[in-house]
Length: 230
Image (cartoon, rainbow, N blue to C red; front, top):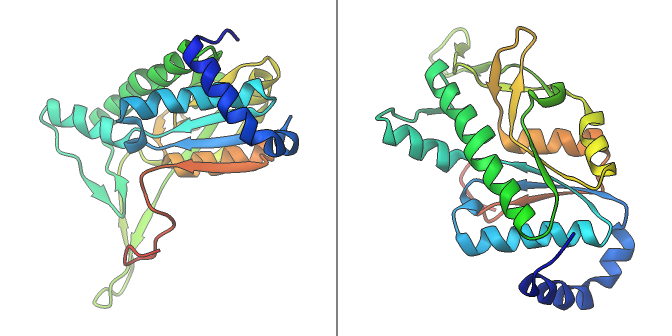
């Protein structure tokens, strides 16, 4: 990987403080969930890409799983389509699913890949359809209130959860010195695309890869309770 002068200076500065961690995590897989809101600042985008390249240079195996909620909402707004959510999940009809695939698998994923490659890395963009990576099943949401005799089943469209992940796709890339960048789109048994929460995908990827660490890069202050408190 070739580094420009700015990236080389950044590497030298960080390395002096990072030797204990480099020894500990060399050869280990680190899964990084890159949140949609954290991708809106240009300086943070470049810093993130440099850090991913540095991790690869010192012997880590970084695997990036990204979101893109704000970017999806922005494009839906531009075409005059309202964003709707149920229990934090985006209601995803067929038209919205097309937008989700366009934004996550195209615009956002390729921008992250390009940023990493511009910093001297070798990133490869994937969705769950590539290499049959993410198998999904439809997510069902149920609601129960005191005045209801039976729980209500809420259909939120093409929203899924992870059924399984083919880890060989990612392992082949990391062994080949690539950085996988994964968009959270899964595919069902019938070939239908599903929009999956990026946190869930990152967690499952970390599990199947037996990752040493799962890092969540987001603008949320931490793990919050139902009242929004730490």
